[in-house]
Image 1 (cartoon, rainbow, N blue to C red):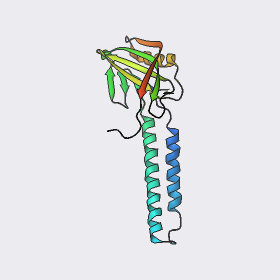
Image 2 (cartoon, rainbow, N blue to C red):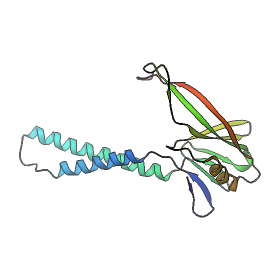
Image 3 (cartoon, rainbow, N blue to C red):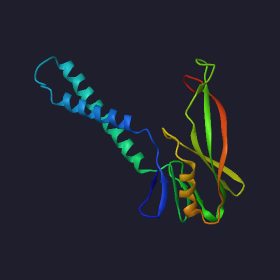
Image 4 (cartoon, rainbow, N blue to C red):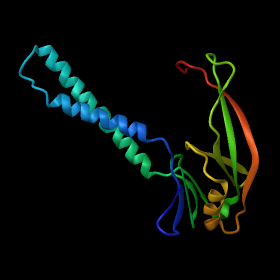
Length: 183
């Protein structure tokens, strides 16, 4: 959770990017190490495989690092004086069209054929934005739950007359996750 520069906006960023960044950096370092190996010895086919492995590590690691850095710059939600935004999904709602905002908690249980009893996932904070009769939901993917009052205070600073409500009830949902290719 981060407030933007001064009081210009309120943003919440996604967690859990650091393992991908570490993996991408490791792949780049591995590609550089393979690139620095002596290439004059050995069979021609082994040189081709080493070059291919080196380029694969450099390209894959560079792509992973680039994806993590660009996604770190884009917040999950952004609230400012013009309205409510979710840049990851392209959602934009100006304050005159927003009727109310609700902040709650959802607990998702995923079921699949391999684990029929259901595996509980961590709880997530949910922000519901009601605009002109339609309700939009945004789940905040974080390792730890953000405090509801902190989210409410951050949104309320810019919401003006729009009511920002906190839902005390934890909503429980169950989803079926079918492993394998989708068709």
